[in-house]
Length: 210
Image 1 (cartoon, rainbow, N blue to C red):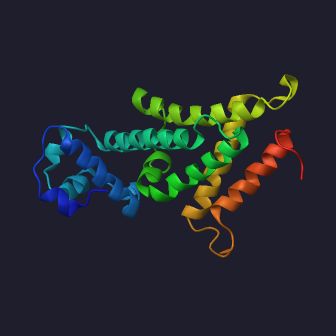
Image 2: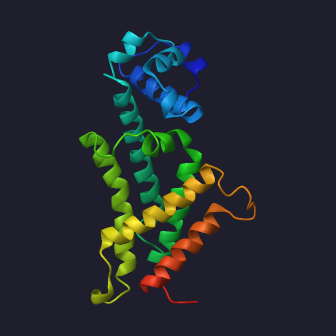
Image 3: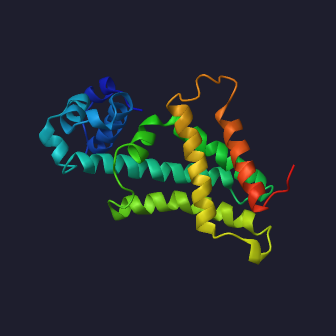
């Protein structure tokens, strides 16, 4: 991320202030939470006047929305890169995507807050909805590839399977981000997710029982 000290030392070309405001907002909501975030704080951290902020964002929620949109776009790219074309097999690619899911959430706490804890709905703007939909589409594609291992009459709706996997993945990430499992230091997020998803997929019949 771009630090405020660096931001203050440079001038802004058209459009660069917009990106700088996104970066300082990600820093602010990571350290102070979305409740403590204001446009005035973003302006001060970026070294500009509040009036300059309003030339790019009409309000607090608009700036948070752009942070979330950028986060979902990066998240979708991360998941797609991890899953690739489903090789060497859908199950292995699915596992790689699960690890990428966790890695993104842990390595991008500002995006995590903007996407999931800022109170900004995914359909607030068409651009945000499109970015979030792209991330969900990767999960749906992976679920569809796995489901092809079952006879058609035994397949669950793809969106339902994808939603279940997303809930499992996000739940594990949230537990570790918030430190809810700190009393169990031997557990890793990757192990917890692998176990949970494995149990779910075995229940569907997608992978064989142990």
